[in-house]
Amino acid sequence: MNYSQFLNMIPEATLMLSLIIVFCADFALHKSERKTYVLSVLTGALLLCQLVPCFMAEPTSAFGGLYVSSAIVNVMKTVLTLGTFIVVVMSQSWIKNNAEKISGEFYILVLSTLLGMYMMMSSGHFLMFFLGLEMASVPMACLVAFDRYKQKSAEAAAKYILTATFSSGVMLYGISFLYGAVGTLYFDDMAATIQFTPLTIMGMVFFFSGLGFKISLVPFHFWTADTYEGAPTPVTGYLSVVSKGAATLTLAIILMHVFGRLVEYWEPLLWIVIMLTITVGNLMAIRQNELKRFMAFSSISQAGYIMLAVVGNSAASLTALTFYVLVYVAANMAVFTVISAVEENNGGKTQMTAYNGLYQTNPKLALLMTLALFSLAGIPPFAGMFSKFFVFMAAVGGHESAPFWPYFVVFIALINTVVSLYYYLLIVKAMYITKEENPLPTFKNGAAINWSLAICTIGILLFGVCSCIYEWIDQAATAL
Image (cartoon, rainbow, N blue to C red; front, side, top):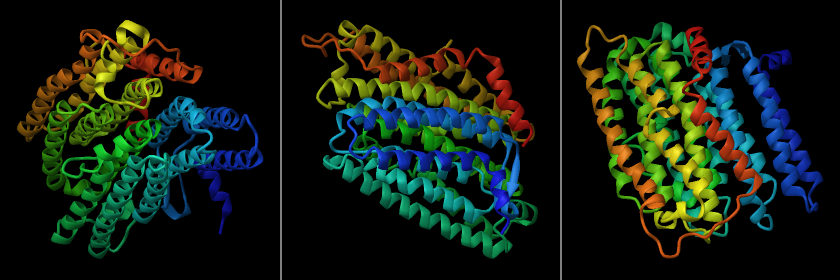
């Protein structure tokens, strides 16, 4: 075996080295009083350093095509690493308050999950893809169950792992159909030889269904709200943005590249799923009073918008998808950082009523929450408006021969944008308008929370107006 091929996997190799360093530090600081602070700073510093190999990595392949990395995949690795860094920063306060219950395993599991996502996105073979997916799913289930002294956390983890197991079985069943029909599991070989047969269509549908569970597409979304509610808030934020970004890009690449010849069959399926996902997510969000369940249905709707880019089936689709994930990371992590801060100072409550009159006592926190919600809703001039615009443009592009359905799907998405604005404004109304005799008292955030909010707010304000970011992503997508 030629071990020098690992040099072609620089992002994965450096992340694995970071994982080993954190593991050794956790062991060395076993009885240290400053263990939580040191591990948090160390993990954050290693993730910042990890941005360099992700940003500078060249498109490569290794191990006979099992591992294939492209420019757009490296861009997404950079985005997900940035999102993971924000999660580590915002979770520092929560970990400090629970230091007697937990230890450095949190950081090890976070890095292990990110490594699995790296491998999943860089796979050139279905079995390598499946191994990467499971490398990400199993540590994620442990993170969901991390608050082991709370019943809801254990329940959330049970629902997550059972759903993940079932979806993995469905996916493997579909992959076996594809292998039986084509005789190979390499992406390039399958793309060159795949033909329309009942076996390939069934395999594609089962594969799509299995990955649809991971992304929370309707009708594969039932686990999402309970899991988001029961998991620790930093883990919920991590689950909502980082894992979703990796899964959506991988599904987009496989649909467009491997199943490119079957586009006339998977595109109508995608239209139906997208309309259901956006609509059901929005309508169910209106009914929620618990904010983490509220954000769960919001994330379901956002998954529909992300997948809307794939309808275009072009390089512009991957550009719009990746840019949307980048903006979504900034806005959604800002919301979950505020939720974490309010939860920490309100006895663990995450009901929407806890935000009544928040502007009276914590105006800065209310303002940042409002900016994040406006970005998620797509209100100009925030970055979320630009990300939705690019997704809509990508969806209607390249369909001159059959223009009706893509435009109809985008029309449904536009209507749902108005609906989403309504339920996001419910939180704004609670913070600014709803009168509360005893609002949440004024409190001071820790430095970690402030840093997390600062990073997210910069992204919300600048990602949409700094054209160099979109051009960087577009160049990477065009080179695929």
